[in-house]
Amino acid sequence: MTLLRNSGYWRWSAGVQLNRLPATMAPLAFTVLTTATTGSYRLGGIMMAVFVAAEMVGAVPTGRLLDRVGPARGLVVLLPLVAAGLFLLAAVASAGVPDLVLLALAIPPGLVAGGLNGGFRTLLAATVTEDELPRAVSVDAMIMEGVIVGGPLLVALLATSGPVVPVLAMAVVALLAALLVPRRTVTRDPQGTVERQKIPVAACVPWLMGLFTVGLLLSSIEVGLLPLVQRLGAPDSATAIVIVVLCAASITGSALYAARGKVGDPRLFLAGFVLGGIVVSAGFGWAGLLAGVALIGLCTGPLMAVSSVNLQKLLPERRRSEGFSLAFTVQASGFGLGSLAIGALPIWLAPLLGVLAALVSCVMLVARPRRAIGTPSVTS
Figure 1 (tube, rainbow, N blue to C red):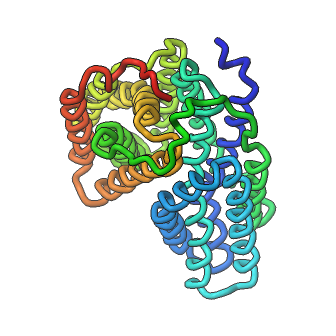
Figure 2 (tube, one colour):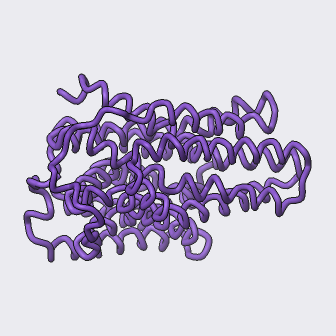
């Protein structure tokens, strides 16, 4: 596998994982910070909500800026700005300022951070060849699982040294990510230098819907783990079993997809989402819950990869950061809606929203030409 010998990819991977790490640390880090400085853990939850809202608002404008100045150059400048905002937040929190000030200070780093993933994803397209891209996205999804789990664990470890330390560590990690932004990239088709080409929104919608589906169904499962387990009469600690099955299945699915090395038909993975979501919703005991969660996990990485690869084929090269930032925002909105569904709907009904989204995605893809579903494109 030539990807494993591509040093540029591994530099990119280290940089993008460090860029993602602060976001996975933030929920627990903000809670630890506000509990120690204000006595309110709820303020930490509100601060995280403000941070995420700022990310969503700033994602597309930041992506557009990265497209204008160049993703590599822009990331080197913007990541230190995120770090500076986090340093300021930690310093001000130590001084015991009012709650509204803490909430306001969570906005600037969120606004800047929102589009950085889109910039890194754009650099991936110029770091690996087109043939390597499906494997590259899949391997990245596998590593990302470790970052998602490792972020809260790192916060728990650092919090023993002081409530401000995790937020300071988030700032340091952002600086380290800036040092690992790829400099050398693969030369692309000169047609991609055409400036300000239009993004084919209509053609992108099915792939955006696929990413939205991933966020919607996964969040309804992850956030609803406790009531799903309680419905079976099991203790709360049993949620760990479901988390392990979900993570293991997700890593396995991405590994199998990477080994195959082809784009694949997304309708197969969407069908897995539909079947898995229905099984989880139906409540067929432990066997049904674990089987449904495992099927969803197996299809998560491949569905994200095939959606990402096909989006890249559609996005003009000079607007990829903007386009991928929009894609990450759409997926984040799915996560938010899934979390909201757990609080507003019966536990058996919430996963069916993800099933419905998967069915809509399938219908959209059936209406697309065959070449837009799984076959390689000659464009970059």
